Image (cartoon, rainbow, N blue to C red; front, side, top):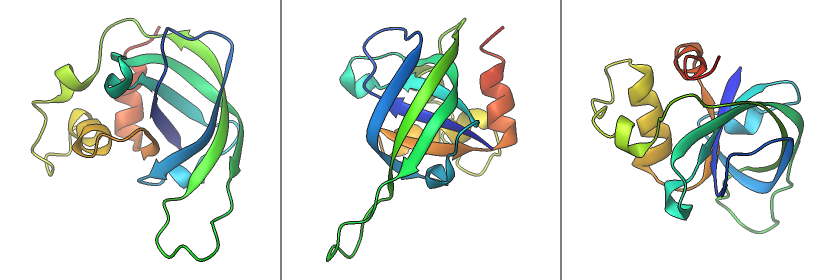
Amino acid sequence: MAFAIKAAIKETPAGVLVFPAQKTMYGGKRIAEGDAIFLFASENSGGHGLIAKGVVAAAAALPRKPGVERQTPRVDVTIEVIAPVLRSLGRRELKSFDRWDDGRPETELNFKFYRQATDKIVGVTNGAAAFLDSFFL
């Protein structure tokens, strides 16, 4: 399975990145070592959307806090960056894909990342992963 992360990333990354205690949604809690992951620099933090592709080097679920009824699962994740993006893909390019039931990969990404604009790790379908792969060599 492939995943995508939207986080506060200030510049095009290289090497290894560590993201502690990341919120997960839409299957993101199933992330594991060896999974493909696409990195989005959060527009909420001054980023511009898709910036790189990577491989999960390590992932560990954080324990839930005792006594708190509703909690979003969180994970610590380490990502090895393997390729920079070739063309732009962010909120601006995805905004018009808002017919939630049309089955398009653009719509899936808009829904998962921008309907609720918090930073997070999400699972993506094979179709969305193939679409995102088209932004890399």
